[in-house]
View 1 (cartoon, helix red, strand yellow):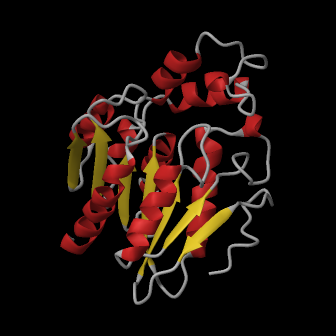
View 2 (view 1 turned 90 degrees about the horizontal axis):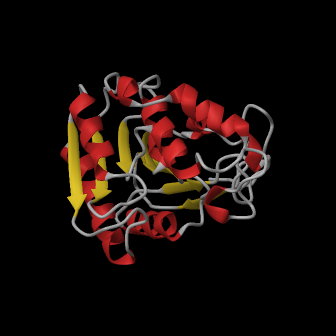
View 3 (view 1 turned 135 degrees about the horizontal axis):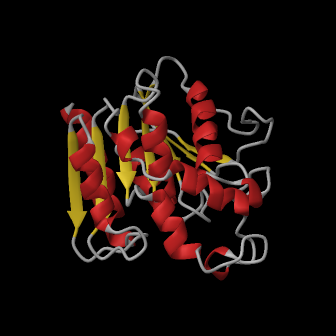
Length: 241
């Protein structure tokens, strides 16, 4: 797959990396969390693990993140959801799509999967954000938009656009009730960024088949030692359906 010139509806180039695997009719698209990008260790390790198990993967940095074009100040949950919809056009030769989203990427996946039942066949949320407005207020509410930074990262200025969008999205629970695809959720019990209760609430709200895997002692980014288990959980979930 040529990933050198992937562009979203605004014409912005999306930085991506492809992990090939032979003989699969699946394509996994991996989306990162807030302030993240495609090169976070979790996404790299997971893509390598999935490819070794026969599932080709596409890691992407949503517009405004990492080496993708666009301004970070314009990044919102809604803008990343639009990017994901645009990426769904990449499925080639009738490949089925499994979307795997970490943190805010999990919220993006829920919102898009609820509307794109025919183009996303499986949904995976890794420490997926559910209470979006609460998260932004909890983590960044004391910062002044336009002046403050997200988690003191110089390359991640907090914008009013991001805060307003998070407030408008509110929660993904209504979307969770509209997801019809098989849905796997994996969450660490020691996550102090997005609490495991978010995934539990999503499972309670969902009307589709779900499986929640809680990993004792794992934090928000998961440790390298469980990357292989996460990959295997995903493949087993796909094969069982």
